[in-house]
Amino acid sequence: MWRSSVQQILDYEGPVYRPPSEADSLILQATIGCSWNHCTYCAMYRHKEYRERPIEDLVDEIRVVRDHVEQGRLEPVRRVFVGDGDALHMSTERWVHLLEEVNKHLPRVTRISCYATAQNLMKKSVLELSTLRELGLRLLYIGPESGDDETLKAIAKGATVADHVEGAHRATQAGIEQ
Image (tube, rainbow, N blue to C red):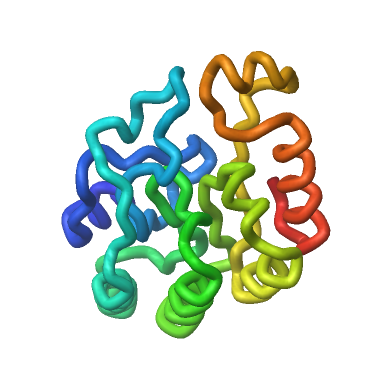
């Protein structure tokens, strides 16, 4: 009931992928596609050119969901998954704005999550990640796919084992689970 109801009120572009553990989460499609989109094994976002959706559209969607919750048409939102491929690519300022709006309009949310690449984690400081954690970003899905640099290069992952370790370390220091 939850997923089909949300799909009727939000206009997702193309197929939306989320981890199985996010099955009952509200999916906010903040980005379209994947900023990297070179991994040889992944075709999920090949048909989408990466771009960020206007923040005003996201705020409007959050308010629509809030209104449906307040009217009893949807259950209260407890979890939010921010998609598409690697929404962590968005600037920290954009993330702060988005998280503040989620907190303002969906006060029962206890966890916000997204996919993250090592490259995007390396572009954010521990302080930036800590700020996002304080505003509700609690879980990152990072897929190193291999612990072998040759394999990572062969599959065009775009990061080394050391990059993945450092990115995960930064997230851990900020208090964000992976």
